[in-house]
Length: 456
Image (cartoon, rainbow, N blue to C red; front, side, top):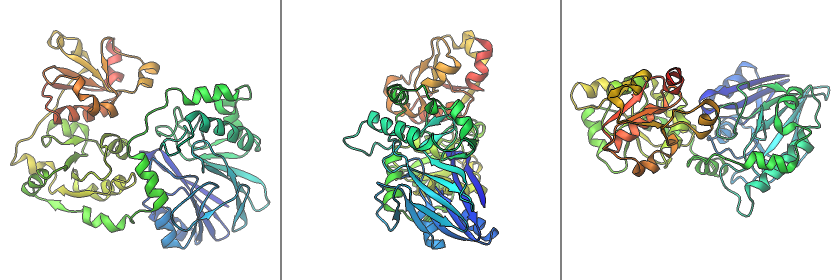
């Protein structure tokens, strides 16, 4: 029996490839599915089932494409209502592959259809549990991130989750491994561990949700207070996962549309077109196309695109290193952004040589306390949880990055702003948003709070 975790860092998401005696199962695949087909070829096996632990909100799954190309049947747990052919499993239903098996364990709470799957080897011994977004390492899935259930409160779902964990997962043998659907950084939980595999025995020691002294009332209170607002693309991703979507291959060639600087500039004038610059934040600060938005491909790229752009159907023009165009399109498609309409041929240098461009001034953290910036407003774009756990800068104004655009009217374009985050990535995103809204006196702070705190 073979189990491989496939971790997609940009999404903080784990999918799984399981193989036994020539048959395989894929759990929670991402949209670009070639890696699973390659694993099947490498292990000389046939993919028998594609299992979805629930309807994902934070990414578009690859279940439909993988099923079509491999002939595998799609499996969901109880209460799922997909709009395509799938097996809707009963609680405790067993699915065999090779000499191993997976047992369905319905664990509602994150969503109503959330289901875990218990892996047993050829001798019937429990080996691992794939918990999806029910149980994370150090945490649990927050209730109903896609806000899909009318008539059910977050407290109702949290109460279900308590029962799922205590009645379905906690009684399992300590020695089994826990394979969660996400790791630290995912919006589907609050405080996950950086590790992505652990024993159930250790989770019973470190995960508050498995603490024997925790009452249901206290669990519900802890889980539902200060819940993050889900990004606007979450409900759309649920819809795609539930109803269907286009294969990645159908639009990737259309998106690979190289445009000269003149063609690019002309396209920019069309209604609702946005320019997304995905180079490094250092390069963006040194020069960028006016009104372009920065979200660097080497950061938590696709989720930040989803958080900043409210419409997943937003037509996008890209500024990037041309060698990364396939990667960019693929990673955007993972969160449902399928409307890339072209990219700047020759990269930013082709624009810089012939047309006007903007810069973002950056300063070192020790400069923010100099006389030169006495009249400046410190703008902190970190999350409230970061302020509480790591620290604040006295007098700084805090607007969480994903809320900056909607709160832009609370800031004055006439003021001078020193923008910072934790390390310098999000502050450049924020600076680009301010620049695109006619804020001219913006200074990005190198190194963010991690560097600023040395001078406090």
